[in-house]
Length: 304
Ligand SMILES: CC(C)C(=O)/C=C/C(C(=O)O)=C(/O)C(=O)O
Ligand SMILES: [Fe+2]
Image 1 (cartoon, rainbow, N blue to C red):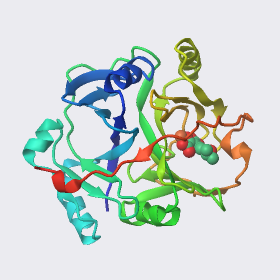
Image 2 (image 1 turned 90 degrees about the horizontal axis):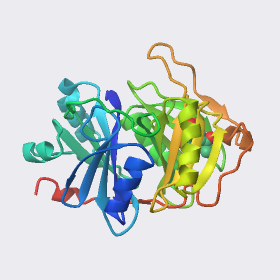
Image 3 (image 1 turned 90 degrees about the vertical axis):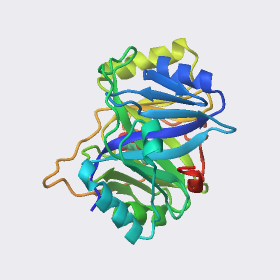
């Protein structure tokens, strides 16, 4: 079965590339690596990229990329996805080189048509990532709102080998999932909704101080705070949500629960209360999770 090293990066479509590069570098705290035509690569680790921003018509999520645990698993994963009828496409050596990655495959989930990418051996930069602003340590998770909750839940847990960390039942369904091999409470989460859209992206903040520092940086730069600081009951993390230049919801998350590989705790069914949402009693602003199209990519263009 598939095992993962981490959630590696996402590709976002943004309406003003220059403005968004400035935001993700100087407000979120990533490091700009390079720009190739209408795409900008940024990092928050030793990897060549942990975020690709692409100039687009509307803001949204174009691709979610996971690094596989080991390079020698690539072919078995490709064959597994093919057997599951997911129709993976392997990128050409030239495409992979352009992406500064090793072997790379892409496929679409059969329900929302979002593009997923599994890759190995991303280029390691010559110098370590040194946070200039708040100490962010990784891209932590992606959360969708979807009206295909049950289908996606099954797809991630049975086909893609994601473990269930917690669920929240009934109409406000939530599921927090972790890719097999990774320790964090969730690197992917789903919430039931009327639409199919990106709810938010989260970066891990190293210390509580980094959340506090970010509150003041957002205020000093007139960046809208959408929710928090607060404390999420599911992962126990302290959170702070804010809007990027297009209104996409970005989260700083500190102190997320980590699961051991051996004998992890059982998933819980959490009560759908405001306490689950924020143990400190806060409420999200109307803009929270509002903006973020799930943008379908044309996989036929891969390798053209
Ligand atoms: C908004 C829901 C109900 C919630 O509680 C979210 C929890 C967490 C967490 O516990 O870390 C998230 O970060 C999340 O779902 O993204
Ligand atoms: Fe989150």
